[in-house]
Amino acid sequence: DEEVVQRGQSTHGRTQIQWQIALEENKRIDCGGAYIGGCWVITAAHCVRPNPRAFRVKFSLWKKSRAQDTTDIVPVEDIIIHPKYEQHYLYINVLYSEHLICWQSSEGRSASVLLWANVSLINDCGRFYGNRFKPGMMCAGDVEGSVDSCQGDSGGPLVCVDELGVSYLWGIVSWGERCGQPGFPGVYTQVAHYFEWIRLHIGWSAVTKF
Ligand code: 4AZ
Image 1 (tube, protein in one colour):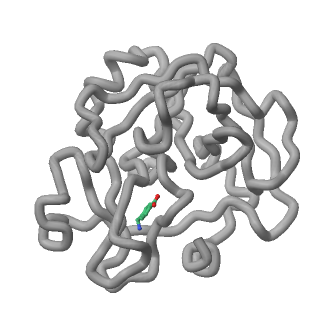
Image 2: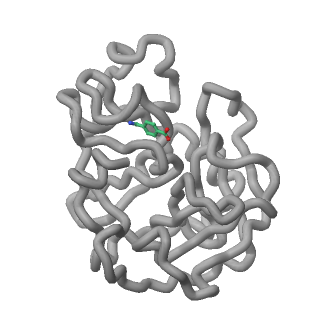
């Protein structure tokens, strides 16, 4: 989104964005995702259909249009959608590929690269969204507007860094009332809410700290 592109900051050279992936469906990239270790990627359920063959996971994606090494493009083996996912009620799902074994980093060379923004966690988001805001969701951004995720960012990671510098996947870009609107912060899936479900599927072995 233009707003985000203009206000965002380039991730160029920022190796801490290594968990970001792009989700490709029939040569199109409309969603992001986060590599969470092992063979697992997490994204937003509304980004996928239960047809793994339609999707590929792209790593090292600094720039959407860039031709990439085939080792950075992996097929999807399986798609697991949260049982309570319904239309209009966004949950998460985990993608599995046995080919997803290692990460290779590469640097973007032009301006239209992956961007990042600083957002603040916002409490009590029902005051903005009423009963559209449900358990398992959280809000982040800026109540005044401007800094926000937007279309195309769906499924991508909201990362919190603790005082020791350890990064945690805290949220997944989900939805919102347009983008950057005052009084309508971005809505994210609250990863902690689904931690047991995620762990059930991926096991402890796959949990990676960056
Ligand atoms: C979307 O359509 C979308 N401002 C993602 C995030 C937000 C709005 C829309 C939050 O994928």
